[in-house]
Amino acid sequence: NGVINCGGIVVRPGDAIVGDQDGVVVVPAKVAEKVYDIAHGREEIEDIVKEELSKNPGPPGKYYPFMSGKIKVESPLGQLLASKGITPENSNQFEGTANW
Image 1: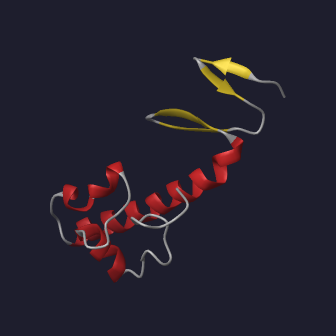
Image 2: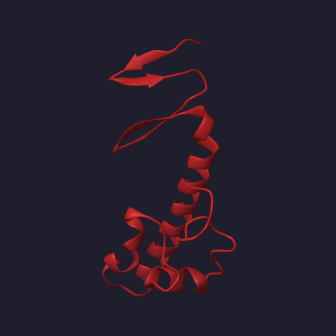
């Protein structure tokens, strides 16, 4: 239950350590829930995009203008999500929504 430094990164008690085949990140405890909410929302969107591309093959880039920020409602991804009931009113992934 002490503070450590691992690879130049400070890790404190309560911090979340998350890793996959691409790497590992340390999420400070004070923002862990917010980060989880954002990441979980993105994961749900990824599943919708994968499903759409399996039904209607095409370039995945059509749906990824959100990689550098939030989703624009009028974008192809925004329109796809709206068809699935995901809107700025019920998701934190769109431009103009709070939470990050």
